[in-house]
Image: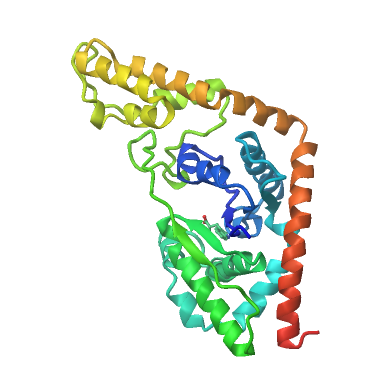
Length: 320
Ligand code: TRP
């Protein structure tokens, strides 16, 4: 049996190049037998408008489908279509000490950044543990910010299994991916909270406006430029082919080629890389029935697994 990979995607904003090179690309490469879900219960911590949450959830699903996720190879679903995770999170909570959650870094970080200190935010690692355990997950691919959450999930599963003297939950491991630095338009790490993103599927005009805003060092057009310290170049390296990168590096070193020119090259490379996917994305967003069907198909599969796990937990606890 293949190992089961699972990951959650928070539908809380336009997916951008940082998400693509940091996670989405790898998710799609490793899609066989994987479970991926749109974490809309989690997103309730930040989004309190029904139409917005529904739209962002559909857009995130359409993004994955447009970029090559095949709903027959991977199980793609909405978290809220598997409400068993809520029941499991309660059961886990009853076996978990509050001190475990007090030690979570992300809660403290988020509250320090100004998010309201809600119970939802505090409880988040328990729901995340339930997401993972509900699907009998073997491996959770993560960035360094999520390692602690998977460790907490293992702790909760162990506490629960010990409490009831049987192996209700399968213990997952995390797999730490190599980070891919993606600079935002200001040169800092691209992230939604820094408001420096380039969306994957922005309409052409908006994409151009974002690319033109990328910060450069102001070297005059005629002067030679250092390709190794330029934000435009750093993004170009992610998107363009090695041959194209080599050509642009020569132009930088020779001088007489402005940052404005390089930005147009980056735009062309983005179009070559994502243009066809953007058309698929737009078509999916025109007729959402395809996205809905794919998500319903995924929900059926994920829910069948979650139902079995929940039944094991109910039986162990005496709930039935
Ligand atoms: N916490 C993850 C994030 O912010 C999203 C997530 C929710 C998740 N549940 C998960 C990731 C389960 C992996 C497994 O990116």
